[in-house]
Image 1 (tube, helix red, strand yellow):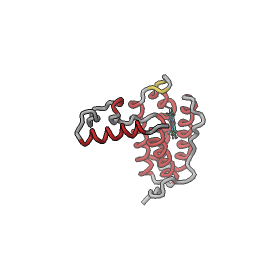
Image 2 (spheres, helix red, strand yellow; image 1 turned 135 degrees about the vertical axis):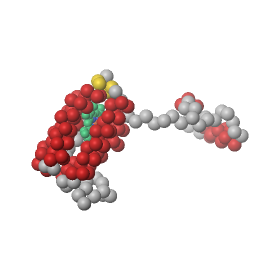
Image 3 (tube, protein in one colour; image 1 turned 45 degrees about the horizontal axis):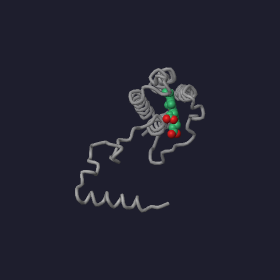
Image 4 (tube, protein in one colour; image 1 turned 90 degrees about the vertical axis):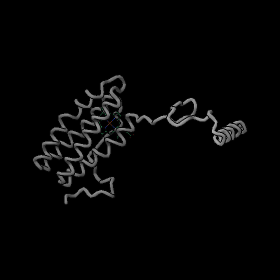
Length: 165
Ligand code: HEC
C-alpha cells in the first residue's frame, strides 16, 4: 500500500497548524467530518461497566464486612448511578429503561436498605442476593443473559478497606 498520500496529508495538516490555517478544526466546533473532537458518549455497556459493576461489588463487600455506614453510602451511590443512566439512556432495544430498572431492582434495593438500617447481616445477604438476581433478570430481558452478575467472592479494590472503623 502506498503511504505517501497519508504522509503528505499529515504534513499539510502540520504546515496548516504552523500557519494558523482555518482548515484545522477549531476547539469547540464539534465537526466529526473535519476530524474535530467529538465528546465521547457512554454506551449502556460503558455505564454498566464503570458506574454499576464496581458499586454493586462495593455494596456487597461493605455489607459482608458489616460496615453499615459504607454499605448505606454504596447503596445511595448505586441508586444515583441508575437515576443518571435512565436519563442518559431512556430506551434500550426500544424498551423503557426506567421501567426495566424499577421492575428488576426497586424491591430488592428497598430490602437491602432495610437490612442496612437494621444492621442485620443475614437479612442483608438475602436482600443482596435478590438484588444480584435483579441485575441478571434485566440482562435476560434485554438479550444479554450471558452477562451474569454474582455476589463478589473477593475484593477487586486492593486500595480500599471495607471493614468498619
Ligand atoms: C435496564 C436493565 C438493567 C439492569 C437493571 C442492570 N443492567 Fe447491566 N446491562 C444492561 C444492558 C442493556 C447491558 C448491555 C449494554 C450494552 O451492551 O451496551 C448490561 C451490561 C452489563 C455489564 C457488562 C458491561 C461490560 O462492559 O462488561 C455489566 C458488568 C452489568 N451490566 C452489570 C450490572 C449490575 C451489577 C447490575 C445490577 C446492580 C445491572 N447490570 C443491572 C441492562 C441492565
